[in-house]
Length: 275
Image (cartoon, rainbow, N blue to C red; front, top):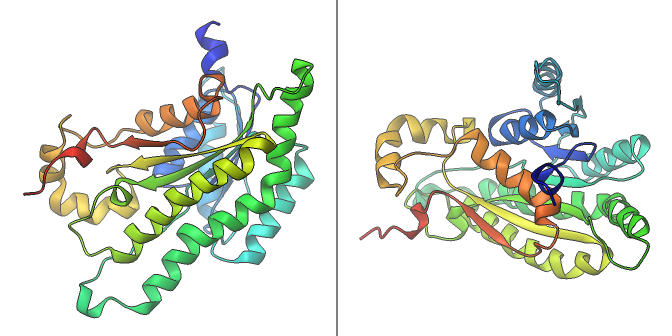
């Protein structure tokens, strides 16, 4: 199989939550530049529209398209409304990328209960809610490839890609208790979904991301950027092509047999001793 066929995502329908900013925006651009039809969901409607306008204006003959679908993904009703909006436009969804998330850093003695409610809801519970609501569309994508192959084998399953964190693989030094716990829960949820959805023609995988230039990381990088880069075996933080490329791999034919995996996307920094 040639490289274009192996790693191609042209014509695929993709929904990226939090796809207007930060890591989500990096992923959105990777898919649009490679010919996918990308729906961008975010609470910030203006940011959604602006990101889509920028992506649709890319001077790239191979580009696909970007469509804004604003939604407050911390709310169950909004997850259900978003799923219905996609279903009203598309008969199938090839790729769901659960990227929306939040963090909260505060010293242990004053760490508030509200942080747990906010982060466990958005980073974990609503990931399940949205994936559950979109499962029929993801199944439809897999079923189409089964029919095209003329048998029972799903050649091109629906894909669910969760944006996790290396702080779910290691114990962070920063006081982000609810964040690391919620991401660890997300990693395990992905494995559970892999077992549940695999027989239904849908895969579930996690990218455990290290530091990338984003709003969530801005304050940390401003204060500790040099130390963070110096502690990484590769001497840098993540680039847009790193996370975009990893998502393209998992969404393409090259990643069709990957299910229940956690791919650490951190340059190896999780391996470094803190002692």
